[in-house]
Image (cartoon, rainbow, N blue to C red; front, top):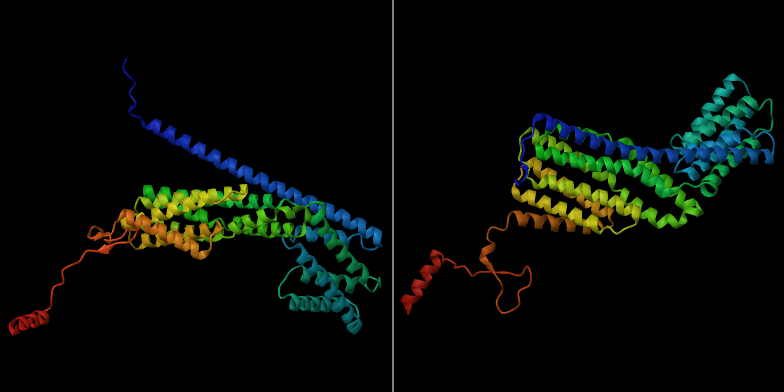
Length: 439
């Protein structure tokens, strides 16, 4: 029985259907990743909202127990500590207390000197804000609390002579209630916070590295430009990642229940700190790819492969951080990328291609540093791997003229050039002739 033919010609409709199926599969995969990232973000939002509610209730309870007049401002201070100071709650609580103190001191002094009234209220607030800015050097809770306290003292003090102590008690109760909730009652999982913020950044970065590699292979300058725009749009995600690093650092520092996560967190955080530099070099590669394709410069086949290996190394780095595994596979993929870069160099590039090779090498060195290598070690590993790839693509021109050193066992890399005949100069030939005549 005859076997069915496998080389059946495909119609344009078949190509359209195949391409459409690929697009649908890609969209489904990206949509699933986006949905998972949004679910993780929603979990963090719910935890922070629960922390704020619990801190407000606790502050109101403590204020009611400690004395009248503090039932409103203490919960407000607690919510401000939770919601507006993620990652810096201890410092912001101290700033809040300092701001209340500055506002009370300035308003009491000026009330004694200039009295009370509409104009005096404006003067008190202006001086309190200026003093707070001089103390802190920038805006923040200290300045806001100083201005708010000055307003309260200047407007309500004539009717109520005992506002200073309750106001200080408000700030103290609210700040301590917020810290108690964050550190003891409802601390977040620092690794989950970190992973939920790192996942969209790494996913988008690796996707665009693959897109740049595909654009170089198909010589599609428009696709490279789209990848560049997508990489430029990573700024907000990187900002959220930096905030998550700060918040998780705070949790593992002040929350006893999370102290056992410190080692894992510091390893994860140390790796993610190099991610922003890798994004900068990826943007540079995308921009240079657009230039090279628009000017019809040659792009060796090994260059897109190097980008794909670098994207795989980043995925492996992220997975190793999550699972607390060794970075052996990450190192291997980065060095494979460096070897591909060396082969691309040996295959021949122009000025823009040379710049791309330098960017990929530097990005690979950053990934090795994220995997725990020192700067010197990372640069040396990248140099050796790149040299090996270059030699593989373009061996030394006079390698066949070298042979092992006789008389001892040859070690790798130990060669001695053959003895070459040295042509004597005209003066040496004349001296030799005179010596022979003299004999």
